Length: 253
Image (cartoon, rainbow, N blue to C red; front, side, top):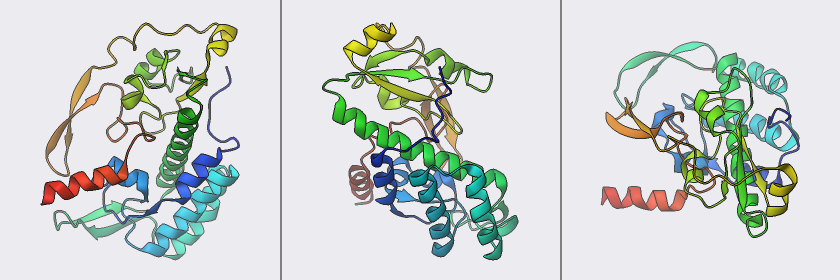
């Protein structure tokens, strides 16, 4: 099977989802929850809206036109250097008031921005299509890249075939971590027979195992699935920003 990478012709849903986002200024990636990520474009440590707009414009071109990372870096790096968002600088953490030396722009950071935003946009677009076609293509198959870079848990989930509305996909719909290359295939009954895929009796063994993870920004301990990075244990297509905003409002009143 070909490497299920994302740099092919993107679905219209991915483009529309990305372009519908607002903006959010945030200091640390932990300060932005899943719902706000779904509804807003944000880059940690970007405090100026014009710089956020520059980065977003490059991501938009990458999503809509299938631009490569080399193009993305070549387009953005001169702009960010000219505007002073590059290298290591001292900033004040608004949560703690502490002065810190932080990393602004760098090739590594641009790679993470490029990779994460594209994969999340594609995943959201795919889920819209999954819901639209679920009546006749009712099954999803987990597909992991079969190489040494793949996480052991993701490799174990490879080949799992479950209905699209199975609870497994609420927490394990990819991407499931930083630089995760996993995707899902949507299949109907005829596809299962044609390709020899069998519907799994249940999700993979141990899929519901969790581990404690400390959010060092607020001191809270969260239980997250083993094999999934913090911040990724959700289905980006099922996150409801409006409902999350209402919950936050209710907590404050």
